[in-house]
Image (cartoon, rainbow, N blue to C red; front, side, top):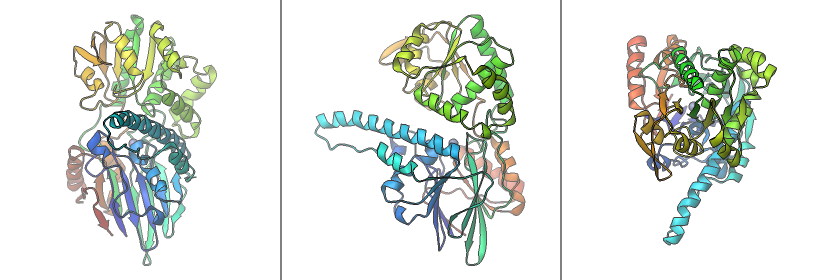
Length: 463
Ligand SMILES: [Zn+2]
């Protein structure tokens, strides 16, 4: 058996693993590379990969960096099943359709200039129609139920606690009369992440692919972050302020809505309007609501106590651009959640332009802000910023909350791995930059006497 690493090797995007035996070829995840032009240039089919000869694809979860290249396979003739949990299918549909839309928009913007310059026109990676063809290939997987993914390959999904429907995958691979067990952690969530159940580890493997995003550290405890969250909101309520929250539409938005529900439902706070100002976030929230079976006990209890009884009257979706513009006049206290998560585009820019210069406004940063983004400049305390070419003074209170990560920290990763460690598997660390995976490799060496492999893109492991 050979396994080739076609992404997320020494970095956090582009997850893709090709498992090949004498009888079968299976891809685990086929994600997009993200983070600027150099990264995006890697979004292609790996050289030598013949999608027609691929038997199946298995998905750990719906994030774009795990599913974003799937339509390339279908475009190139892949006609097998794409196995995923039902929540992953729903969320992947939303995310891939959005990706096609964003690409069409971006390509047209470039092509307008290229037409004028007499340059050849660019093509997107894929079109909306190819996304629909991809979605037709999805086949539903239940957690903890083994199924035949391809000849001689039995797969089993287990909860990974990272987002709705997210899974770790175990493959039992038969070749030459022997069975080898390979486990892919997928992205592992931290214990106690809102809404979803905690990760359930596997106990046997000959080979483990372990994510290492935060292999070097533990994130701030959620309880501490929630205490800060509550204080910020109480202070904003006291001064009848507007709270602006830039957030990614899938995952983080639902987490924040959940924590607002907790405050409102426990009677800690008198409910005020929470505007969900993003069509994608509105749809993602609907998908979350359709899968209460995947909620953890706390979320189920909250849903019974709060959601069903009162129907979340405080959450106000604002799907159209006109609804969104009307929020300029919405009185405080209110909370407006809009994308993009790093303030690089989207409706949040309009709200920031209207709110940043007003000292009463609160801006709550609840996710990672990449270098060079407007979100990062706010976190770094810039006194003025440019929005739509206009200089805007930053008088608002900027609060940065670091504890909402959907990735386990070092202790969580080690805890997850500790259930496999006694079997002395071979360990491969992926989905992490050097900063994350090297310290994790050291720790695994010290603690378990195992020597993890840190592959480069395109590396092949033979078992
Ligand atoms: Zn993820």
